[in-house]
Amino acid sequence: MSASLGSEASTSQLREPVLIALLVCLVFYAVTKYFQTSGCPFAKAPKAAKKQGSMASTATTVGSLRLTLAELAQYDGQDASKPLYISVRGKIYDVTAGKTFYGPGGPYAVFAGKECARALAFMKVTPEDCNDDLAGATAAQLKTLADWEAKFDQKYGAAGLLVAQQ
Ligand code: HEM
Image 1 (cartoon, rainbow, N blue to C red):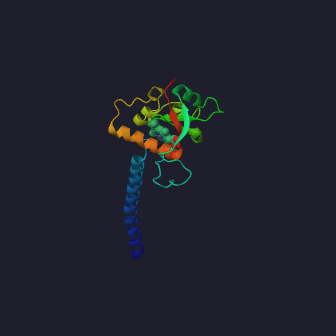
Image 2: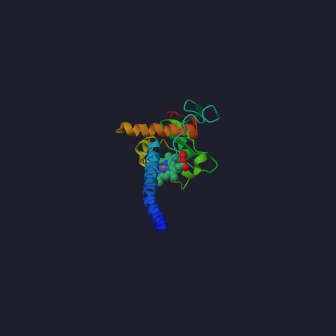
Image 3: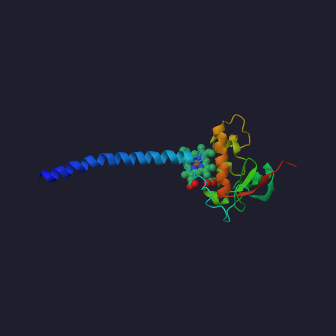
């Protein structure tokens, strides 16, 4: 009798610290996950070195595509037969593989066919921020933008560059 009471007491004594430890782990996981991302708490951060040497493009590889801003606008997902492009600081990415993000009705459809440096730096999903104007960006916002570029370099690879209107 007393032995079973004793084991009940020690079980409940154990339960509380275990729960607290679990809670601490959960908070720690959420915080580290938040800070390792490019501002968007859910976007996966680029994996360091993992894909290097494989077929995946790296930051140094830029494809041969050259488009003006007006031409880029034709790749906004309205014509389903065309690929989806976005530009970040003049680097064009083919984000067709991310159609669920950038295609019509997607959460980031506003970025498709546009230059998105400002929106990504300032973490905005608004058409008026889809441009390359980084005026007023803090060091942290420029870092956020650099993190996005690293993510896109790794995930999609740069297909080409924006060029000035002829
Ligand atoms: C609380 C607000 C937000 C939620 C719940 C959210 C949710 C998500 C989720 C679930 C993903 C997919 C992650 C993955 O599988 O890689 C994602 C990716 C992304 N998010 Fe957000 N997001 C939020 C805010 C923002 C904001 C403000 C921006 C503005 C720049 C943003 C830009 C992006 C981009 C560009 C991607 C990457 C898509 C890709 O991999 O091509 N997010 N977000």
